[in-house]
Amino acid sequence: MLAYSLKRLLQLVVSTFGVVTLVFFTLRLIPGDAAAALAGDTITGEALERLREQMGLNKPILAQYLTYLWDLVTLRFGETITTGLPISGLLSQAFPITLSIALATITLSLIIAVPLGAMAAFMAHKGRKTLDNLITTAAMLADLMPSFWTGLVFLLFFSLMLGLFPASGMVSFDDPVTFLKRIALPVMVLSVTQIATMARITRTAVLEVLSEDYIRTARSLGWSEVRVLFRHALKNAALPIVTIVGLSFGSLLNGTVIVEFIFTIPGLGSLLVNGINSRDYQLVQTLIVFYALFFVSVNLVTDLIYKQIDPRVQL
Amino acid sequence: MSKTLLATIKTPGFHFPTISLPGKSLLNINKKMRIALLILVPILLLTAFSSWLPLPGPLQTNLRAIMQWPSLAHPFGTDRMGRDVLSRTLSGVQVSLLVGFSVALISTCFGIVLGTVAGFFGKFIDRAIMSVVDIFLAFPSLLLAIGLVSVVGTGLWPVIVAITLADVPRFIRLQRSLVLSLRSRAYIDAARTVKASQWWIMRRHIVPNTIAPLLVTASIAAAHAILVEASLSFLGLGIMPPAPSLGNIIRDGQTYLEQAWWISTMPGLVILLIALSLHFLSDGIREALDPRARK
Image (cartoon, rainbow over all chains, first blue to last red; front, side, top):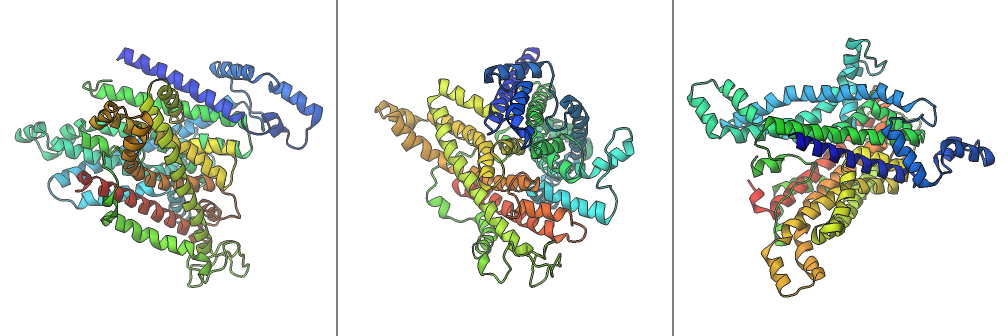
């Protein structure tokens, strides 16, 4: 286990290095450098040259690359080009918000999807297919609905028509109730897709386990159907469920960008969209690297949990 | 975990069906394909002949008919400048279909070439190609497309380039795994023993056998590309107004959600229909080509 964790950690470092390298050199392909982007039309000639020198853009590209790497390793992300705010400060404000949305979505989806999927499998096993068919169809539809569209429909219905949740306003951890109300709609929107995927996987996994010998044994011991389903069947179906949580994390991250934009939540996604709109490459490149690192780390954790849950898994 | 279970776990839209050559079987239109065509053909026809419909042009404003409810004259209503939403939507569908089709086609071509090279030659070339692929796969797909848009810029063709670049790595990986599984087949060994050239084996035995699973994947990739383009345009990073795209029409309607819900919701329904039909198409193709997938 330890050897495996170390090996995966090394892989993580290598792929992060790859990501950083790719991002650095790709952004250098943009016509006109960061200094020109910052200066706009106002600064030209000698002043522009001085700005370049200040930003280290007149050094050879390899030197710039090494400086950039060293800055990343020592966690010096620098300042945004447009506003001059320290990027690390922006990240430490935005990341907890996005993380809470992601974690809340995963929790809510698991709470709803796992029992739902298990029930569907149980019904299907007994030959009653209605709930099963319903879930399969709903899952497919929910999977294909563009999240920005679901977002707007939810905004229209729950916020503008029913007035249940605020559509805008401050997002701050100081006031937990307001915070939860504020992230409720985004979490619901993201959960639609997640629940669809998770319920479908749970259903398939449980259905497969239900025909195993040990389930028949459990039944023959006279235990109730509910206990057999939730204690025995579901436990053995946990592996694919963990896998799908890990696999769908990418689409969850994609979704956070969209919902943060719709509900004006100052998370990583809003930061990224604003960064691109204001051509703030320093900010954009840091964010992209940060997202990739986040995503890859989650995959790593999923793999480790996987091994922890099921000792049979050979890694 | 059993094989069937592994197959149902969703690796975004990518399945690994083992399939024989696409031949006659593709012509047997099954139920799922029929559903797909039933949705897709009317949309295609409406889009193709949109200029013959009794609708104002997609860019034609009419300040006397601002934010009107859906009616016979304007089936999807009108927007804040009195433009006909149906007309704009159809024009947006053209963009979506162009993006979906181009991305699927270009990604498949690149996937075939690079994936075959990586899988067939192995060793150094394989490692080089796959390490770049792995780096790309370290990003969630929409985020990768957003990042690439910041480099290539906005507009129709840059967006197609960005989405394609974000999609190609998955095609390469699929093609490589298909080639790897084919490479050890007996008939390839047979071809080797009669001193067939590598190029000939690749062209004659390997690539044709990978077309079918690629076709299944390509139709899902088209649906995916349409959704990504719409998302980009919605975020204001894709196709820029006044040129209509489904994403930017929906973005446009967001401000007037309370007064004119139809501006945003109608184009969204159309996206859903297109994505749904492409999924049915992909499922249908898979069933047609792989008898074991039939229930």
